Structure formats: C-alpha cells, structure tokens
Image (cartoon, rainbow, N blue to C red; front, side):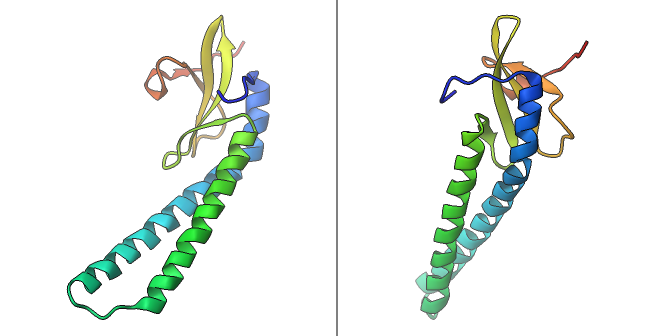
Length: 135
C-alpha cells in the first residue's frame, strides 16, 4: 500500500467506477504490446536465418512498442493514483486496501465482475477471497 489510504466498501466501489475503463484499456494495451513483441521476435528470427532484413517494419514496430509502453505506464499511474493496487493485468485483478474487523485486508475485484463482491486478508492474496456479506 503506497500511500496508506484505506477504503470503505462504498469508496472502493466508487473508485472502481472511475478506474474500470482504464483497467480494460490497460489489458488491451498489454495484448497489443505482446503482439508487437511477437512480431519483432518473428522478424528477428527470419533475419538470423539469413532472411531479408525488414528495417522499416522493425523501426515502425519498435516505435509502436515505445508508444504502447508509454500508454501502459500512463494507465498504470492513473489506476495507482486512485489508491487501488494492481495485482494482475491479464486478469484485471485490482485490490483496494481496507481493514475488516481489525484485519488488514483488500476489497477485491477482477475484470468481468459486475462490482466488488469479494474481500481477502492481505496475508492470503486472491486464493483467500471471501464473499462480502452485507447487512
């Protein structure tokens, strides 16, 4: 927890409404970065096997990789500035620090879930998720 901020459940749900689209954008950026890296690797293998060097294509792919990396860093900073913690980009796993009955914990959300409906002690991680029981 970078800044020591803790969230009530309502605050975490409100923050999620703000960052949900950024999490989805970050996931898309991650997929595009992997595709560019795979293409760069493919072209590199062709070159190593005495293929024709496709310098312009390599230059364009590297520029795209830099732009996507910058986009990802911006998206990560935006999510972190909300007080949320990114636990997994591929799964869109986002935690919001809290304390539940004296236990340091996280309100836990994964992309695809409608809202925050889970929590877990900080000591257990995702595998210790428990459904939120609201009064």
